[in-house]
Length: 358
Image 1 (cartoon, helix red, strand yellow):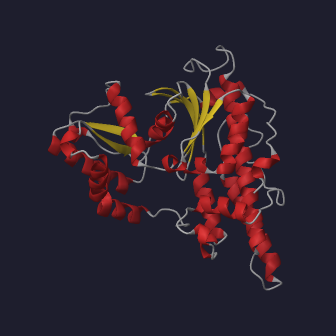
Image 2: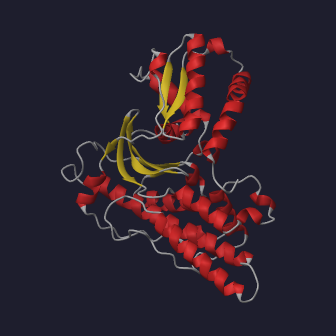
Image 3: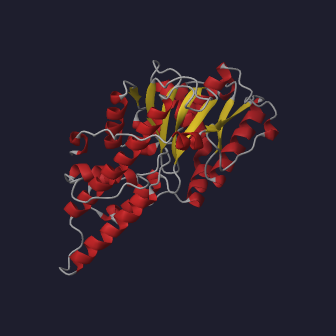
């Protein structure tokens, strides 16, 4: 599980399981296929082979039942999941989507109204965590708590279980002088790789592998660095949204009322604690769906479909043959350059050391 997802394997698993998964969901819901009035399906972004299998199945099902299809952008579905879990949440709110495939910071102003403030310029945070998990060989540790968990979760577990010292190693914050909201996680990855190489070199002389304490301290330091980077970008995004209307992009109509996090990496307890402190600093609500709904899931796709149907959205497609998938997509109106031009300096919020303690 710690090595990430292989597209060909994922596609084969989709193909083998999609029909039984749908049948099981229908049975547990105590409804039949004839009770359905639309089919919502992820069409973008994602791995082409998996998207193709899902879209083909949805088109076949919709055609057989003579019902429309609602194509779903799964990043937008992540952004709307919090409305399902928190009925008090209202538009507009700031959204941070951090996962194995994406790093997005923006504003959700309405059901089909999104503004992009920042994005991951290189690797996604989840990809970096997965690769470092492999590099540290966490899958070889004989620890029951690591069974069946992804790389990023394994790093969080090891740091907590073995009292990782987040201050032992000083990892750099990439692009710390850049006054925008874009992320760079590759720098953290490179610095951590160099650190691991150094520790291994030092241990080689004694004939020992890295100790579990070394590993835990590296995990804690990576988690600490990533949390600080994310929180500072979010802080600048909030400051940008609080500018008067003449100083920010005209598409941003109102100040956000909440900070929402989603995506697999958004389940990390340390990152959530840091974001909670940022939200509290600006008197914003902090909202995070349960971890089971932060990773990719069918519930968020169905929920997005329900919301679009309620609004009688133009995305509802009667001509099923016209529905297709797209591996890549953009998230709303891109205002990243406007953020950069605003040239906002921030005084980074000092995060409580307690959130980094095991």
